[in-house]
Amino acid sequence: MRSARRLNRAAGTLAASVLVDSAIEHYRGNFHNKAMITPLVTASLSLAASLHGTADGRGEAHIIRDLIYAGAGLTGLVGTGFHIYNISKKPGRLSWQNLFYSAPLGAPAAISLSGMLGFLSERLRDNPPNKPPTILGIPAGRIIGAMTSLGLMGTVGESGLLHFRGAYHNPAMYLPVTMPPVAAALLGASALGKSHTHRPITRWWLRATALLGFAGTAFHAAGVGRSMGGWKNWRQNLVDGPPIPAPPSFTGLALAGLAALALLEDHPDD
Image 1 (spheres, one colour):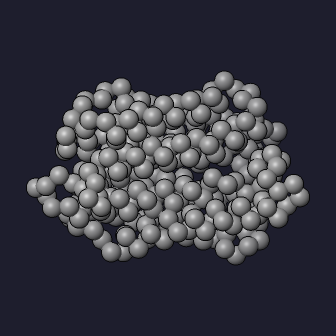
Image 2 (cartoon, one colour; image 1 turned 120 degrees about the vertical axis):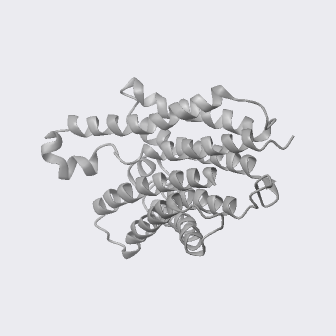
Image 3 (cartoon, one colour; image 1 turned 60 degrees about the vertical axis):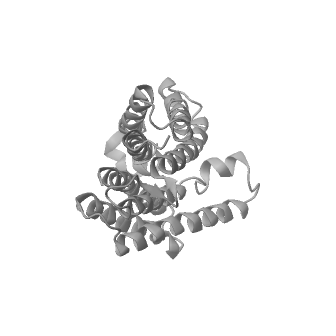
């Protein structure tokens, strides 16, 4: 139950990041397609479900939360399709220009990750209290660790593309493309290796990655402040500057990784 509620918090962190980020990005697009309101609705529902799950101490899955998390996962897949279509219909199609300045390909995946983590938290609750937790017959710590490791690598790809667009003009811009891949590798090794092994380096690296998300928000806020007009011109700079709500995606995934690590250590299967 402790790990399930940790996953709820991780899913909620991702949902909050998506909610604010998609609101800003789709406002910039003037909501010209009515479907652009969908991620705001699903992210809000995912956030509400995660808050409810964090406070829920019952050892059973909740059908409403399950439906919300499944909807969030589906929204991310459909949104990725929309973004690919948006780029493909522009001159040059998959050119650097379109990848940099058109609908971000990796952004919708964040709401899918929120749905995935929430769905996994509900599967954890379905386990009998006196048996090692499993998901689809696989030890829960292993499957959550593997899925979170893949999620971290996907988030790095989006961050790397946008920081490449910014020419890495600040050395700190290298951190989101160097720290999370190491966290993903360490967590993946934990998910595939011996579960009873104590892994302090992995734990501390995941904690540092969680802090990176908050630090990234501060860096992006400073970037907005350095734009012409600074925060006095927030209506334009908040939309055109570095996305302030995006970095906490790393925090959410790192929290999920810590939950997986705790499961591996508390319920060894070898």
